[in-house]
Figure 1 (cartoon, one colour):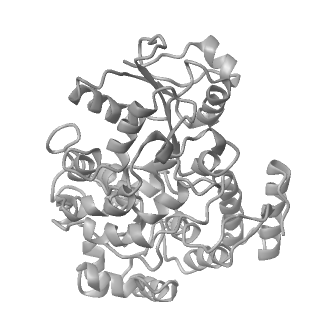
Figure 2 (cartoon, rainbow, N blue to C red; figure 1 turned 90 degrees about the vertical axis):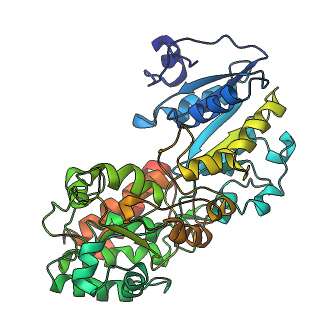
Length: 447
């Protein structure tokens, strides 16, 4: 059962209508657990647990508010601040703003998992991805949030393009060609030149490299309260300009039609691949590949290998309200989703695509122990076991370079990088305009 938010209530919460799903409002009582989320994914997981455990004794009452137009966070903040019977017992935060709730302005609302009664030794025994733990750890050093996915990134490539450029489509050959594990982009650009020689690009747009650059940097956008440009992030100016000046890509913008066209092999030139986690394969490339079986579109023409640098992209963390009156039940749900490495836990079901029945989508999960006993083979990847690439990718990802302002600051940075790469501004002007935008809109001054 899901909660419908009326327009009047939405206006009271955030000054405009909230996007919510559902039909019936459940009255708050001792047997109801309130969930705040931005999609129905986590509520559906929790409902599955309730359905399979009739003795659990609680009803899941989701409030689902899309993140579009910035509506989710204000509504969640209001609900947490107001407290009371309608306050969320469990709430979700995605990578773009999770640090606000685990380490930033709103971290004090979150209950340490150990205070709920969760056995924290499972982090080690379940081999939870370290970056996920780092992000979910409060300023007091307590874990207050963990995810169910692991979003460590790899390089997802077209086998036919690799064969044409490197003479082989095998993951180890492609990994060597692009400089996997080197920590720099030198061999990657050598590979880009090789690809250019056979009429292909190496990526679709500069955004495909940005996520790897952003989340492999040593420091985040803020250091001691001041805007800081990590040298690896500043180098993205040169990376983007090099891509554009040499025609190493199709100059697309991620999440736009031309970007999706490159997944079908229908772009200006064939491109080798995309940097991303398992969800990019499952929920983005596969639905946009132009087919649903081997031989259709680019379906089955893909592989995955290690990237030049370790990074992660995306993810959802589950947090509990420190004031929840249902700590034991909340702990039972969160533990099942994030830490339980048994074959009856959500982690195992999610990894093997059996959460809602056989034949579902397989995904990389937070538990390395689960992936070690799971089948990550995909027809989409020509039978390759994707976990061979994503388990080490999750281990290499760094969760110490995020801030609660990343979503906004990233937008300002990428805008100025595009201006520089296009030749509309020189380097100094692009950096100065970036700093000014951050100062004007976030009142954060540069070092």
